[in-house]
Length: 358
Image: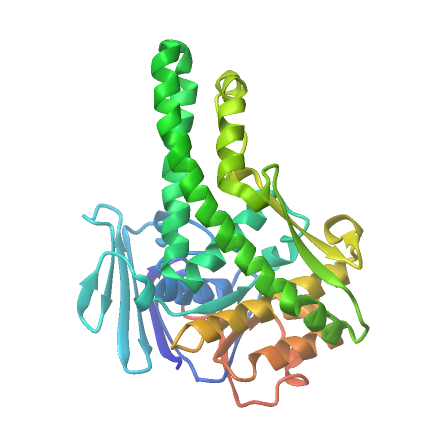
């Protein structure tokens, strides 16, 4: 399944622009700043409902109050519109049927590989938590709901904690107890989902990494938490109650899934601090391969592959791996030099040039 066209009006740098797409390889070529990534972002919005970079308002072309995206996905017309003063501001239409948001079944699975992904491992814990939870949300509907429930419960608890000094201890204790229970229930489900995904990673990561590197390696993902993972719900509830005075003093909840992290061990060492740039790229590429495999197994629609200017950052060995990853899927790659790709892709391809007639 594939996109066959994309039209943009007042979206980012595009005033009124249409491109043709083919089911195999699409190469978007142009200078930096010519709007290459904007085309990927438009497909991302049409597929999943939101940008991977900014909020909806920032997608509107400067000097205008709305944008419109339209595409043909197989025989389905997909439209996304946004009006700054609209009620609601953003709407979707699938074959003319209007939606305020894309439900799980209406989304198109995709894998995005962009420069920020290469900093995933040595970036902040928040970046890694967001990555794992976003992937969970694209693998199953409950993945989106459970994090949303957890974040709402956390917000309520933090509000009570921040205003605790203004209330009597009895009222605060009763209120916090209610939200401690809710928080631990949602947290336990979220942790179960995260650990399940990490198990799937660990079943494949060493083999994939070793194949890309051409040398055997041991790669393992470890979930880092201050809470006992074997009896998580009970342990977290005990921690929340024990740390209540400290949380009130600081004004926030100091324990829970929102404070956890994941660590990738490469031959026993923390890759974030010990791996070379080439090794980090190989790890991210292997994770993307697993992401693609999981999405392909879970969804009826074949995933779309979006690669934003990452080919130039990979050596020949990793370029071959990336090309093998893309061969059976509709792929859109941005680059400043299309010739760099030609030695690695044998499939039919379509070139789209940016920077003109925007």
